[in-house]
Amino acid sequence: MSEDPEDTDRPRYLVADVPPLDVTGTRTVTIGVVLWALAFIALLPFYETLRDDGDTWWLWTCVAGFGLGLLGREYCRRREQRLHRRPRDQESSPLGAAGL
Image: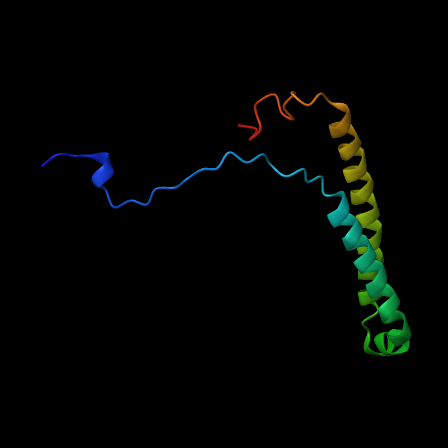
């Protein structure tokens, strides 16, 4: 009996030569910041109820999410600018695209 690799029942995968998406995260973080701000605004009419129930931490969670999101957005924006300034043929990591 021959051990022909073509006769195995293992699935074969086709790997397409597709360039990676240019995703910097700026848009995603910006959407998150806007959603935290909207959540805060949506909870403001219920401030009295939240205070009476001891749940004002919901508002502070929205404030914290908004503030941390602004920091994250600035980080992503600066990273995006650095990526646009580097030459196209230069890898983002000296170890390769996967960083390995």
